[in-house]
Amino acid sequence: MERHTPTPDNPWLALRNLTPARIALGRTGISLPTGAQLDFQFAHAQARDAVHLPFDHVGLRQQLSERGRDSMLLHSAASDRHQYLQRPDLGRRLHEGSAQCLREHAQANPGGVDLAIVVADGLSALAVHRHTLPFLSRFEEQAAADGWSSAPVILVEQGRVAVADEVGELLGARMTVMLIGERPGLSSPDSLGLYFTYAPKVGLTDAYRNCISNVRLEGLSYGMAAHRLLYLMREACRRQLSGVNLKDEAEVPSIDSEDSAGKNGNFLLGEG
Image 1 (tube, rainbow, N blue to C red):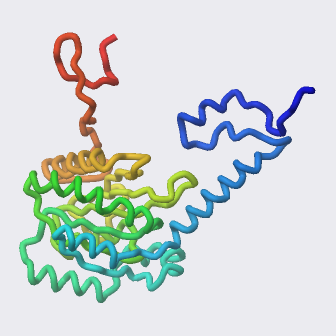
Image 2: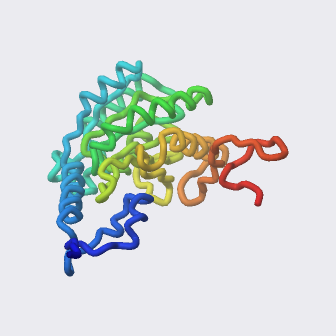
Image 3: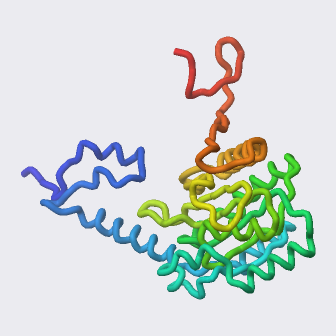
């Protein structure tokens, strides 16, 4: 006697091995199979949890200290998570007490710096917890070789991207890079975003920033993100601008391969 399964065969099923996208989920009648529905609900719960996860700035500062990096903890004008989510404008500015701390630091350390690194929880503290230290390890190693000077790492609780402009302006930094948790997706609750600005000051729009997104193990690697950021820094200083007028044209490092002529090249661009 022939046996039947409740879920019809799906000829696209093999494609699921090639992508995390929700394709070839199958069906039971006119509905999703139970397994696919439960997976979706789990991913949705992970995304919600990432938004509300508290920022472990104590642990992050401890890890930075163990690496020999000074840090400062600041707060945005948003008093708590609830207000932060409802009032994006408050997350873009520093609390007055935090702004005064930066003024005092700048007075004690005149002359400014090349780069201010700002870390904020954003919409996924999970991304910051997982990826800040591994990325900074790769980036600062290469930045030190270029001779860039930097301020202590600035941690901003309840911060949004534009708060880095105020931080950079108060510190007299030529450039800022914001490391921030991006809005979680159903397949990426821990995506870290990098936002780079040359000549930061309060009031700049997104048109003056360059974004490097999806920095995580399943997305853009730490090494590649550091490579692209350093390219933007060098070009920004040479051309004295950032944002829409500064295109990311960094050459992509590739696996070295020997062609028939004995030359190294990109294995994706082999001669055919």
